[in-house]
Image (cartoon, rainbow, N blue to C red):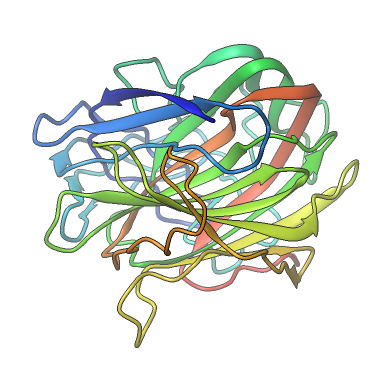
Length: 339
């Protein structure tokens, strides 16, 4: 049986970087037009999943320019945000295999918190908090390319959660391909989220979201309901593919909220080193642990608007874990793993 603690916050979606060498902008001031919520759950390791990240309503805020990229002006689609862009920065973060990417980041600024990213400061900021053992920083300990990478360092104990937040460029669209190079020293037995991407729903203030996560040493691909009211129900797909350890791994994902010809957003898809993972039969999770519930409705989307990157554990982590991420990229078409 799982217990959950629900928290709420507000999020304004601001303009963000929109070049391959761009740095995402940080979220703007909170909007009062709509609130978002977060939940975290503790469980007994019997499987299943818990609710996670943020929702948002329309808002407006200026974008910012970081040392690694540029910010452009523009406005998002329905339910999104409008923002004014800043100027170009210096020292573009090109990344490996970023050709064709809308946003690409290689962490070569080598600073603890990259320009344009925000560390959650509960309960006023989006994200699932900054709590528990471990830390999230950019350092030179291990890199896929260049000198630096994003380091999820020494996670241990009960529900360690450390992540960074950023917005996607306006008018990103309803289909998102992602790619990251990931080095895992361990893979959690319990559920933890690694990547979260939020999207707006037409004619609604709802912001639903997808997740790439870990559970039972395999991948989780999860669709989540909006927050508030609860982020539930969610639709959980657990892979038959084991997470690769102690080597750089190319992880790709496709979140398709347009899903041409279908009435609802598509299930998440994940690739490891170019091979698409297969999933076990999906299940709905809604805090009741009721088995055999039908797949929840997954509304189609307008635009992907925001991301959360880092390890967010919803249970205890069973062994001290370090995860490194490099050459993180998002695009409207598949980016791939090759330079």
